[in-house]
Image 1 (tube, rainbow, N blue to C red):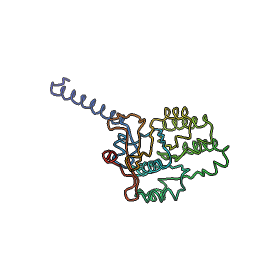
Image 2 (image 1 turned 45 degrees about the horizontal axis):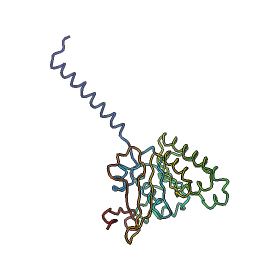
Image 3 (image 1 turned 90 degrees about the vertical axis):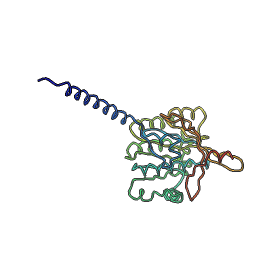
Image 4 (image 1 turned 60 degrees about the horizontal axis):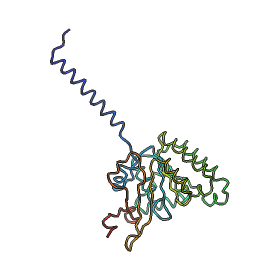
Length: 262
């Protein structure tokens, strides 16, 4: 049976479009996914948010905004229908829920239905029994392995870093990388002073995303600044510094660069 030129051309066109749509589908699959912070300006600086499947190290001193940023990420992830597990040495569950409520990022409903889980870790207990620190690191790893949550937040790891050997801390981060390769996204806050510089450099190299938060005096005001030191897949087209403030009315509020410099 002979095929007319018109039918042949139609077959060729169908074949062409099938190939094009197939390529588009492959590109869609290849597009990176992000966990949004729920703040458009933060997401813009992060070029979409924190990449899923990444290990993010959040460094900063006292009151530099580490916990607030992690709470922002927690709120954004929950609003993306993600499940979140927070392991905290900084606050009790009640304190964390109350603070997020005061910053207009209430997650009590998510907490009640089990989409947000908060596990408290008694830092005072670790200080009293430092020999248990490394064992607790292993318990945390096992907890993360078994949990169903996509986003895991650890705020903070400082008390473990101070009371554990360098090898134990490095092993913890290495195991976290493996978990991230299997789909978890893990955000860990630490105080930079907790590590020798050599260890801190190694941790930064292990992590796919590194953010540093600082408090800086600009004129007569103190501003919290986040520097994006490392971001997996970033093109760095939007700069790597972000200044913000925190207040009870707006929560985390971005401070324009022009205002900071004024």
